[in-house]
Length: 178
Image (cartoon, rainbow, N blue to C red; front, top):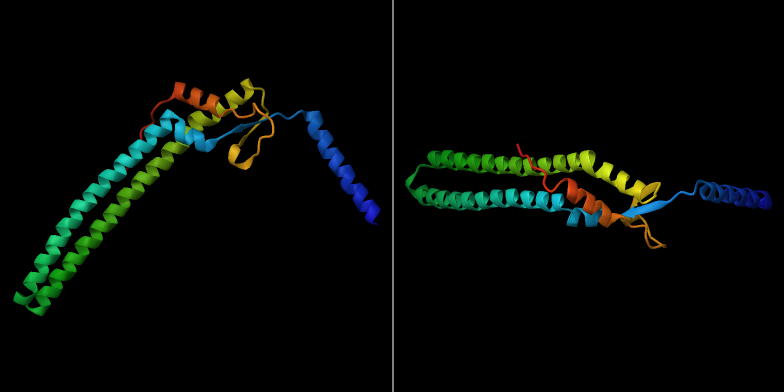
């Protein structure tokens, strides 16, 4: 029984390796992390995202100072007000803070959503086609991400060629927010 199982495994392995050898599959590698770091369009997109998030943070910092000032004024008025009036103003103040926080969360989510949409557009309209084009030019049948592969042979990495082709086609993509 063990001999039959071993023979079956060996014949399957031989079939798989002969099928691969017969196909002559040439596999190339692309470093997606490097593309995300070095492609001009990605540098531009990341700057836009950082700029929009920084503007939101600047606005939040200014609004927080305003809220702190209002809170201090409310505390100072507490002794001069009756309890019901104070509670009413405090609740109104807390509602304003909560409303602003929710608005800020929506702005940040809008930036993140716009960023993801820009990445999808970039992938669909440019990157997929460029990877196929460069892979074909280099004689590869399959391109895999370098984070999931270990290259044994030199000359399989087409990352720089992809970045060059991407840079020549598109340098910027607009980050649209809602």
